[in-house]
Each structure stands twice: as C-alpha cells, then as structure tokens.
Amino acid sequence: MRSMAIRRNGMMKGMTLLIAVLLCTAMLFPLTASAAYYNTYSSVAKLNNANGCYAAQGFAAGSTYTYSIKVNSSNTKAVIYRTRMSDGSTTLMKNGDNGTTHATYLGHANDVVLSYIDGKYYMFVVTMKAGSMSLVKLKYVGTTFYKVGQYTIKYNGANKSMSGVKITSKDANKINFMFKSGLTLYKGTLPLTANSGTIPLTKSLSLNVKDAKVNGSTISNITSYVSQGFGYSKDTIYVPLTYKNVSVVLVYRNLSKASGTIKADGNLSFRITSAAYADLFEIEGIGIANGKLWFSTNRRTKPGDTAHDGVHYFNGYNAS
View 1 (cartoon, rainbow, N blue to C red):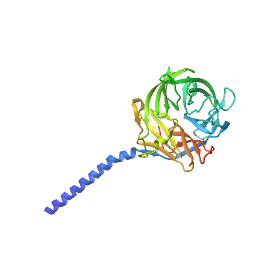
View 2: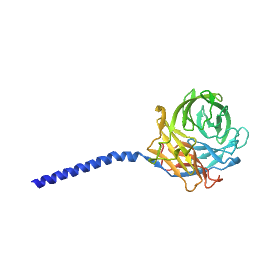
View 3: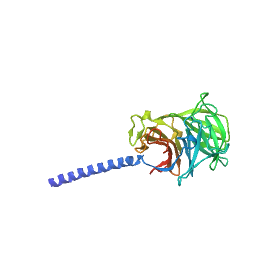
View 4: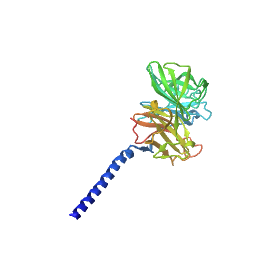
C-alpha cells in the first residue's frame, strides 16, 4: 500500500510538472508567433538615369502604379517614373508645361504623396527647401504632369524645410498632412483645392530609434543610420533608415493616440543587408498598396555605380 501511495504521489508530481510546462509553452507561443521579421525582397523595375538624374528620392504607391522621383547632383533637375505594379513596365513621365521630361523646381524631392481631389490626380512633393517652394503640387494625367501649386511651410513663424510628407486624412474642406524632418513629425493643414499659401505646422511626435528592435535586437550604431521619407497607412508609419549596405524599416503605430516620444513596434521589423550591393543599399521611400510594402532604392556595387536603382517590395509581408 505504501509503495502504491508513493508511486501515485510521484505520478501526480510528474503530471503537475507536465501541466506547468504546457502552460508556460502556451503562454510563450503567442508572443513568439506575433513577432514578424522580413529580410528578403523582390525587384519589379529598374529606374534609369534620364536627363542626368541618377539619385532616387521621393516615392509613392497608388492602386495600380508607383511613382519614383530621381534628381541630378545639383538638385536642379528631377524626373518622375511611373511603374505598373503588376508587370514592372516603367515610363518616364512628360512635363506637360514645356514638353520636356524633367522639372527644374522640385529641389531634392525627398518625398511625395498622392491625392485624388475633385476627380483629378495630384502629387505633393517636399523639396527640402525653405520658403515659397517647400511643397510643390503637381497634377498628373496618365504619364504627363503639370505644376499647379506651391506652398510655404512654416514652424513657429519661420520658414521650414521638410524631408517627408504624407496625407493622414481629408474632407470636403481641407487636407490634413503629416510632415517629417529628421526624426520629428509635424501636422499641417491646407484648404482642399488651394494652389498656394502658407502651411503653419505644429509639432506632433518624436521618433525613438535608439531603443528600436529589429528581429528582436537593438542596433548599436542606429544613430549613424540616415533617415529618408516614410510610408503611412491606417494610423501607422513605416520609417526607412540606412547605413551603407544595410536598410531597416521601423514601424510606429497608433499615432493619433500617441504623444511625446514614441517607440517602434518590437513585433514587426524589416531589414535588408545586401552583399550584391555592398557599397550602398538605400531604401529611399515607402509605399503601401495592394497588401504589399513597396519601396524604391539607390543601390551601388561600388562608388560611382548608378545603374541599379529600382522599385521593389518585401517578400511575405501582407499589410492589408
């Protein structure tokens, strides 16, 4: 009897230990499963160097096409490429104002956002200039664009240049913009159909990159990474950062409810470390469309290489 009691007691202890292990596993598994990391990509199109414009800058994604801007070394010329997402066919867009295939007023053209207003399609481009040309409005019809507006961006009463722009919402009267300069976000509003004027900014949020985790770990030299434009979708921004041949994308959520300095989502991150483009793999801009995270690049195999810029998307990620 005593040996049976001892055996029964041992079995109960074993069962208790097994249940404890199973409970711990069940608790840990969702945390592991919810973390997502993407580090491969597919190329859809190559971006050429028309009119001596070899540096990829602003990028946006619509429902059918992506739009990529490239500039020359002095920021005195810019070209726009339209790429069909489904097959990669790419067209150099025409300047409908003068019949050329370039513009001279887009500056560094660091970021661009698309908008549909009163039955017409528009692009808003941040030039990284302070003053009356800090934001430029283009109307586009097919593969032809026309300059229709320009604006002065101000912060605390002073002219301010911006490196990123997205539209968070619009209604019958106004467009609500989100601008970015470095790692700071700003809010600004413009009358819906205005083609000129001043956009006064209010500071919105600051982005914490130092504590951001990519694939579960922080990056020791993250402050050496260069910030570019950004992507926006459903109250979430996607922020690309580049250091040499490594580009990461950090994700910041629930912006409308946030304040102060915000941290990146530790459960979703992206990184490309390129051996093929060992001199530079720079994600310039981000667009979200048809469930994919699209981006444009400057890619170099060696210094001076300008032959490999392109349009791409991350494999496996579904943004819908």
